[in-house]
Length: 327
Ligand SMILES: C[S@@+](CC[C@H](N)C(=O)[O-])C[C@H]1O[C@@H](n2cnc3c(N)ncnc32)[C@H](O)[C@@H]1O
Image 1 (spheres, protein in one colour):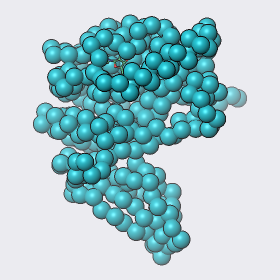
Image 2: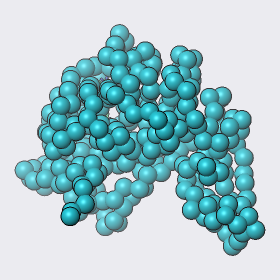
Image 3: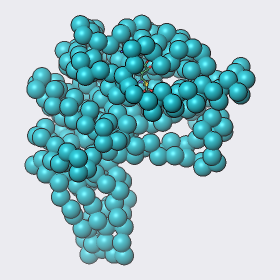
Image 4: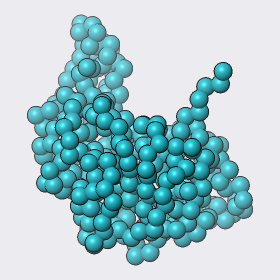
């Protein structure tokens, strides 16, 4: 009997054929343009993803990483809401649909899904990729501009993944507020940079003001204990690179680590972890050093030594971003 194919594998297979029709030079130019645009001043007043070459380059170059980042955030979120499964999903600024694939990988059921974006070529490619996944086939791909007056249809889950950084301050506020009105749960993911973290914290504050509670990564809904400018809360997701990915990105490493910041918040009760490991654990001889964000809304260091037996063994296995202590 063959093992069932995971959404990640289906996505990988769907992406593999993507650059087939494009001359390598056109694909390389599209990637260069993409990198230049994403390094340049954002927001833009017109879509960065302008044509098929742009979106194919985006999907090959970035989508595996944004997919893994969202999937990782959703895994932590799902742990905090063990009995909840989203009955519907709206993905704002969804592009080629990375978050829809990640939601499908986390809760593999069919549900009404709407992806909104202002870039038609991204929506078209997203639809094409999703046609490979039976649970995403009926996804609606709709053109919409994020800005003042944005209204979203109600949904159990609203995701906004790698979008806030492309928006003006006003549009950023508008999308977070619209997500808070429409969603029972809102998950926002940004690059794991100081700026990405700052945007996540601003969104987190707005969601809490709107009556939401934080499910992950924070074990609390109090103010973030990190002093702005001194550090930033972020996590890491491992992305295995296909040969296509290596070809588009250059280099020969079999994987890369995507750094991301996120917040998942809900209108309904949640069971956040008691503590979250906020840095890569340091494994020393006979001890593991953990940096934690704790339920009281403070940062703490914990040293788990060999003498602590089972707890020590658990500490050796705990990863950056996991809950602590083990249930
Ligand atoms: C970096 S991509 C992220 C795509 C996808 N969410 C992901 O995680 O891979 C940003 C997306 O936001 C969309 N976007 C940016 N500004 C927008 C706006 N004002 N209105 C609608 N979509 C916008 C872009 O077209 C693009 O698809």
